[in-house]
Amino acid sequence: MISLAHAQSAASASAGFTDFLPLIIIFILFWFMLIRPQMKRAKEQKKMLSEIQKGDEVITASGQVGKVAKIGEQYVSLEIADGVITHVQKQSIQTLLPKGTIKGL
Image 1 (cartoon, rainbow, N blue to C red):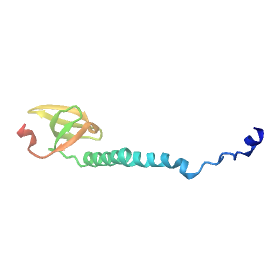
Image 2 (cartoon, one colour):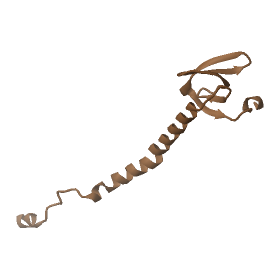
Image 3 (cartoon, rainbow, N blue to C red):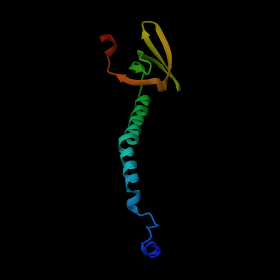
Image 4 (cartoon, one colour):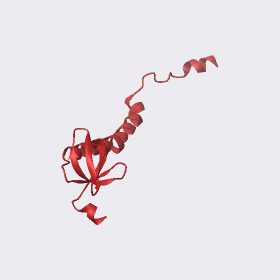
């Protein structure tokens, strides 16, 4: 019995590339399905916020639809009705609408 135990070969002590292959594949899938699209969306949002001008029609994160009346560094003044102006953070603007959308609502 003892000779049989000594006769067995020892298991491979070093981890090879194939041991890490599933982990590498999961990371690549995670990159292409989650991280990359989120970075692209953030880049588009930043570009849209930098191009906002007075008179543009926008939708905020809270769902308010309004026309940009004034633009500051951090805040934007939105006219949500005739003579009704609200101040929102610039980062809360989510969508830039085509001209004339508010009249169609």
